[in-house]
Image 1 (cartoon, rainbow, N blue to C red):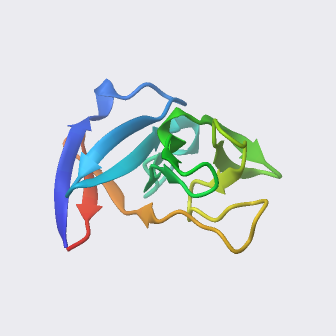
Image 2: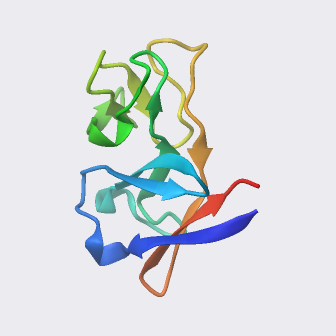
Length: 114
């Protein structure tokens, strides 16, 4: 596995998702600076594919929290996915892949799968 530079941290709009192509796969990247503390950067990356709506739209979802769990709501059928691990809060049998993300010298990196 290798780290792929996606963008500069300053290019991300807080609380708004953006799609990135990492090793040929669409990834939804979210920056929530209010959740940044200690080792946590406030960055989260999930698959961009919505398994319920069958479309690449997760990056266009609304960010918020449900029961104090930071999540993104799919813009299609409004299923909520936990930003930390990708689990669907309404459907325990469904989850998005969560991608490792880090910041180094104000550059955002996502760990690509081989």
